[in-house]
View 1 (cartoon, rainbow, N blue to C red):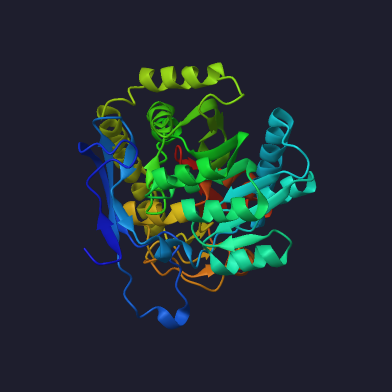
View 2: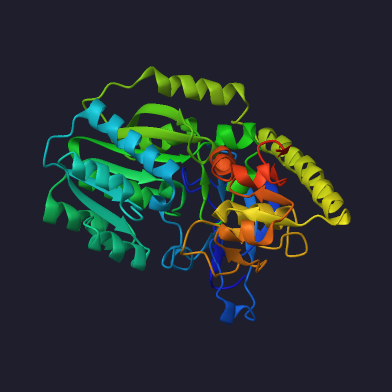
Amino acid sequence: MSEACHRRTTCRLCGGENPALALSLTPTPPANAFVAAERLDEPQETFPLDVFFCEDCAHVQLLDVVDPRILFENYVYVSGTSPVFVRHFEGYAGQILARYSPPGGSLAVDIGSNDGTLLRFFKDAGLKVQGVDPAKDIAARATKDGIDTIAGFFTPELADRICRQKGPAAVIAANNVFAHADDLAGIVEGVRRLLAPGGVFVFEVSYLVDVLEKTLFDTIYHEHLAYHSVGPLMRFFAANGMEITDAARVDSHGGSLRCVVQHRGGPHPVDASVARLVALEESLGLHRVQALKDFAARVDRLKEELSSLLRRLKAEGKSIAGFGAPAKATTLMYHFAIGPGLLDFIVDDSPLKQGLYSPGMHIPVVPSTAIEDNKPDYLIILAWNFAPSIMEKHASFRQSGGHFIVPLPTLEIH
């Protein structure tokens, strides 16, 4: 394997030495490695997408770790371009403010703050804010827009620096990034150092229950090293001097887990939701590798179903384009072999992706005006978690005779 990727041999939650291979997806390039026209001739390296189950603590994870600088320093995902996510973060901030009442003027920190969308709601509520994000251009833009953002990775040393400069944090957030880091213990050490005695650490991650129940295999890509469930996380935080006080299922990314964590023995009581989700996970067999083996079989069935549909449509002379170029589309397109022979182009609303070509497959990414200009017969919604809002916004496409294909969680044609 190249220097850009290495395989660890131990569980990143418990350090156990018994990871078992549960399923293998088609190797892909990094999911957000879009390519400019002048670089189309350069080969793009692909890396394994093998999912492992820890026989010691039941944590599900990738062991192949791609250099995070490759994945994140030139990031192209921006939260603020999605109205759905802006509303999600507004509600998220509102709930934290209402439930935990951080004092006015206290500090809120967001690890992996992106363009500062979440922090803006805390700032508007009278808190000091500090973003941390390794994507240099996005961090610089967020700072320019009034959300002070450090361009870098969150470490215990950076936590100490923030604490010295701005004081301890009443709220620390980490959304999806708590699944992105190889050194979770290092992040938690930084959180412990920075978090005020009565403060809360809140994070959202893709929830393994939803991944398995809804066959969300395309949420598996190199940025997502961890596929979390509450049971293994409880043991992990307990071993690191902290405790989960609340655990809730939320709708984002097709199904996520939001946990609230405090210093061990902190002021907030442990909510019954924690034990409730642990019981759910055990009832679904998430503490056994067989649950993942069954998941792999369902993915294979979906692959055959969608591939048969697309082959039939192409044989009938139909034109097909994609809608949405999220990271998950890279996994879906590679594992289901949806390449340039099937898709003419991909529409995406992000200006950062328009004019580029999709990772590895090199399908052009264009603005939505291409739908009217080219009039494809079918649009396959690769950003399937936004399918209702996409179909509503582009109702004229269907009214003029076009059809939408929603590939997941179940194959649908509209």
